[in-house]
Image (cartoon, rainbow, N blue to C red; front, side, top):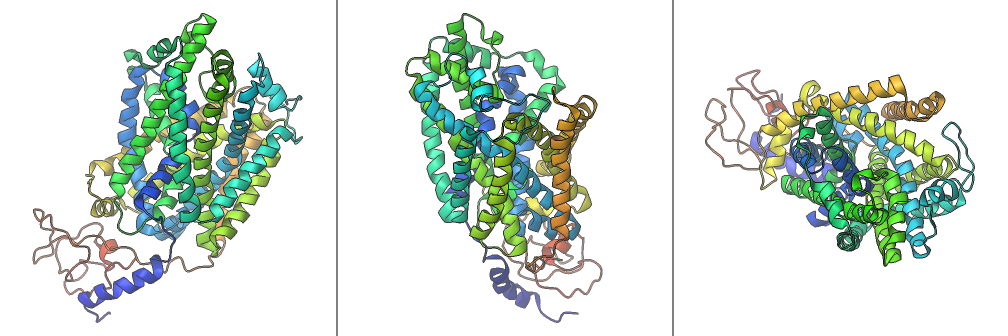
Length: 582
């Protein structure tokens, strides 16, 4: 039994805290972190996915479920990621290990999912880079669809949906190699000199370039028809449950939540950080950019419909790869000043993709740094080279587009959703943490969140995602995906998920090269108590460290975690050091 006093233990906490936790690299400023968080969230999906999803799910009426999803699920889960990373100070495997050693496998599963996404995400950036320069000569000619599938991605001999090929397409291979070299170089420089500095350059340039694209788009003939199609509400869509699921799905895929990015990013924040305010700003900045993308895209589609003499609703290819690499080249060829417009549009895709790609690589690199004690440059190079080799072999080949389509479908609709549901169940049911995480967020923030947050993270989010998961999984099991043969979807769809589970298991049972459990959690603010140990509800004053030990009284659910000893088992409690993590 310890004979130390609470006051002495509180003093002893500070040096241990510095020793164990403060040697972690940090962002130089909250602005740097915010730009990186926004850069991670603003990716290719904001530009090519959101406009089409909004249009096909009620137009202007879609904004209602979208905003509800943003507040109920997006912001709530984003703050969960922030609180986990900031409080437990590590990449995803470290954070979940510190919750419980058996939860470490969930952290590594998130790392594996990020790794798989990283391998195919890079190739889309390479496509956009090539198209930025194709714009100057309108290299796609009169048939952008044939140019994309046959001449560019297929190297003149594209693979059919039921065949697979390792034959490289050098027009994709070489720019993809350059994208990987740039990404690895930036990440090897570290958080401040690499990741933060890159986002401070890329994000402002992205906003300026895409702002110019939007301005030009809405001034084109017929643009108003496109905007009317985008914003005109179809209220009956609000009665369709699939519209609400689409809104929640878009928020999750867009905000970079649930698969370890924001957990890792938040772990590099200094101890004193306004977490809640930063989370709200990042979420609304991401959604504002999506709305801006919708305006720009549908202004351009209105022009395309005007030129072809059809209604906007009759157009095909308003989302995804077809929108960016077939529909937009068609628009660029039709419009005055098209080459400059095209360069701005595709270079915006490159910048948006790079900021997201950097965040994905940091999730994987950070996990290996924590577990094996690797330096930032060593982790970035080893992990980056491994991902680059897979990326170049699988996705820079004649069948690269088909393989990408399959892997993306299964990893995003099953892998990422498993990550999100599992995390909610872990911190709500298996190892309850929501109360203390909420108190952690509020202790450091000007904007306070209430118990509604517990409800969103603990029930609304997992319930909604479970519905999505069941529907998507049942569809993929019963009907496969698209026109692809079973061997293709099993090998690269289900196979990529199995690979993630296997990698997660292997990395979990591998020994740590550092003492991950030698960690002192940041003490939660002490709340005033009466002589019986009960919280005084009407006293809002807070201090960062407790000023005295507690006495026997009413037990709170998270007292043991906050104070580091089992309060309430005896009326004569001898305190362990405040903040000690059990």
